[in-house]
Image 1 (cartoon, rainbow, N blue to C red):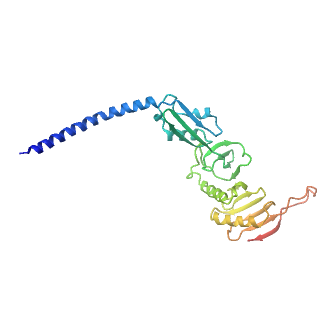
Image 2: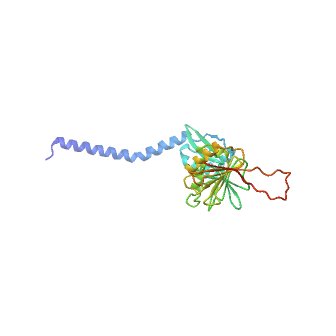
Image 3: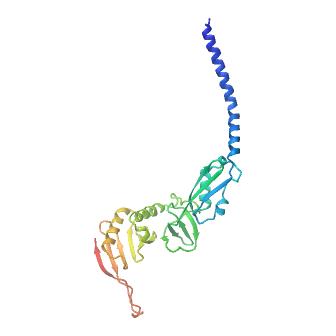
Length: 275
């Protein structure tokens, strides 16, 4: 026989279970009402676009996935940011924020051209994230030209696929090494056409032969050493294929224009300094 205390305890437990079940049954309705009320008071009224890019705000607005009057919380911020950066390649990234109760703020970061890859038929303008920004006919002034890079596939608005375009990693490392030493601003050309003798054009008058893609760090250290020891304003060749024994070779200036044009002239080493 159950005691009166046990019967009372069981009765209280049954009451608690029934109360819990009623609350659970009402929860979806309560949530629905809450969302409806929240949506009513958080409808998009103003869209603030902070836009330092080459696109007009109207260009950006064409890719909005919402309309004024929609609830703020129906906007998938991450998806929208990704869609804008793909549709507008010169947008590096976008940040979409709620500004309660009724504003949406979109802040755009512009993408800039880091280098241009020249293929047989076209030129791809690419940023430091290896995102293809645009396809043009010629390399713009002041942009590093990359020749001999094999491009298997690309899509404007997306980064180059490193698995398909295997030289991406080489260019990425080389650019990083140049930037680390402050030489990126003085580099006008990278040539990958000779697989085992990558070359650079720096200071507009110096050609650097790097050899293969191994030991870029050591080769760059030797390059900086030779640049510091020699005149960087005159035509020269620098060879750092062997990072332990770099060579600086100063080239003779071009022949005087008054010289006999029929005579055979060549650039010849005026000095050969071993380091």
